[in-house]
Length: 501
Image 1: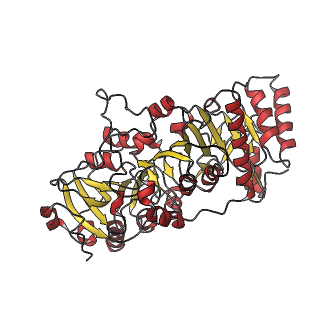
Image 2: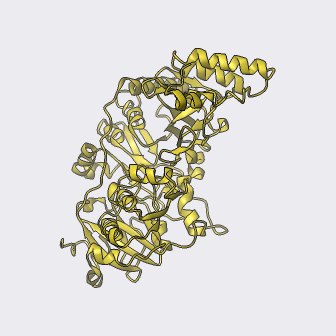
Image 3: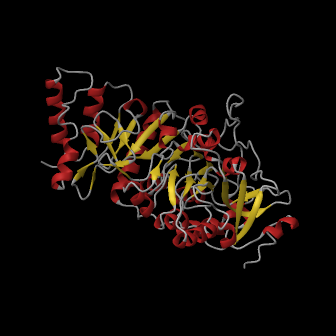
């Protein structure tokens, strides 16, 4: 067993150090388990792996509540053995996704800012029985020092009857002090969240817990299962160029300051590429108020262009994680992690004027966005925090390549097969083809702007033809649709393998 006593600063708690197997034996069927983690960062690993091994010979399942997606040692291991009965609020693991889309796992896809309070309110089918959380240290008072994510951890610890703590010795102790832990009171006692600037500190550097609530302490030396980003391709570079030019035009028009407003960027390759595009731009003193801090934000910091970044998770590539650890003393001066209730707070987003930049699976000609479902039925990952920001941002931007599946799918369609963000919440659309600013436009004006500026040339004539025929068929209705054709593009793809006629 790894010696973790120097990280467990309360001597009495050292008697609670046990194996992962002993801790996992405490878990009972149908328990509600709240875990740390947001993206493959800061999630428990040793106990879930031991629990999955136990489930192989003693089949049962639990209800798993996280902050967002977590690594293969948790979502993947439990999904493979049929150990997850219900899951919320976001995921990205292939085995878990297969269970969701195969009807084996009941999945509740929530706005991330709402997930902790849903659990506290009892909306998820009862209270949290056990919280399993990763930390880098435990204080003398029994409080928890988180690692590379905050997510819903503080709320789950507050609500749980029992806490099982994994002390991960691969996580640097220099993480201590990089967190701002604040859990809002529930209505009718809730107060305004006192964040008015990106770098405001409003809470503690630790998660309040206490000695008595901690049941077991488990050593762990498994690193976060972070994933590499795809190389910056031509499409991502073009999208970055389009949005940077747009921002410069907004500054010239007097609608934004020279250093812009606080940036929010979603998870993944496109989002990371867009942020990376700022490195070679003229922008300086940039502020970020977001969910995930990825490689692109380390690039901004290294280039001297980042003033401050607030998020709820460090979610870099393997190379980015090494860079973060090697330069943590410098990054800790410019970066902070908060609970996702605060990082994704609609109240804060509206107050400080977020520029929201997220990716879409598809969007339709009127500006509705599908972020979650493939062909209307199959769950991909989940809505994540995009809805938290889309409704409340100063500017809401959605990015997508104009086509998918080597051109067989148009990402711009007559009608979305599933809608996560309505036309009322969207402002800017960006593909590698161009940018459509649809602020202040009527639906028919929006349609022409999106088609002409963002659609791939292979599909642009088809979209214009649909729009013109819909206008004629409905006699220029406010939002013209030919109902029996609106989803025909998706039907055609499922029948023939392409949306092209």
